[in-house]
Length: 342
Image (tube, rainbow, N blue to C red):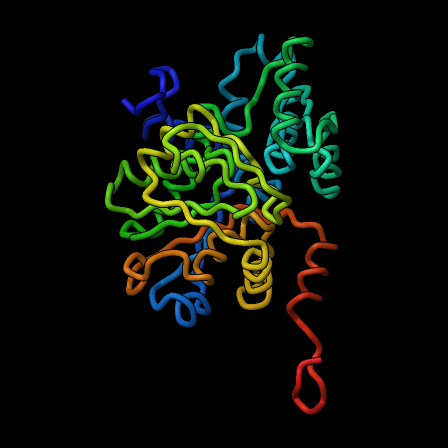
């Protein structure tokens, strides 16, 4: 048994296979494509992008939300569900609620991007803006659920959510059974917990790398300290991973199955977003660009990459167009007629 995980919360390959059968009725199997730019110019090995930005709602979060809600009893569904999210899990819950005819409420923090708020409302959910950060919204979710009797669909610290995200690992193995390294964004730890469980169940030697922002890295700090620890210094472009405190279910799974977690700064995240757009024609939000940021900034030892098969998760593409414009202005300066940079 994983240390610190109660028997009712253990996630295994059978849970993930069950989730694949459930989620597969609704979700897309997303493309896995090779990036020649990253393969030849950055790594010196084969780098593939798992494009969850092309998933329904534009993010992997639909998988976990859908699996969890499909495991609720009719009595739990009748009470309506509530969650907290900066935007991607919100949309996954809201769309699943729309598809299944369930009342959904989403608590979002002040820092949640406007386009994610609008998209969540567009799927039919009630949006409750509360608190400065995700962690404030998360606490308010528990308070509202207790007061109103709603059923909680936690964004990451839940067995069925984790199993739903783990279906991505099975899809990767379907396409590249001999993958060597998989690089995954980390917030609360639901995605990497599920994927690591799926991948390591098939081959324990697959090297699993998590990536977080230098500004917010609760999971990195917790693993380093050997206990759940809070970390939140400042705003991050990777708003989808803006989680200061990891879950008590995800933390021990990550501690046991994830080989390393690396940190990238905000400029590195922005540069990766730009390169994904310009060089690979992929629109990625900040969290979705974390793995590429780690590759481009050489935060991962070459022995895990050179002449290896590597998959970098593009976890989502829900980025505000104003932010895309800012990143283009930052990096793509006009070229003067004499060839100099303007």
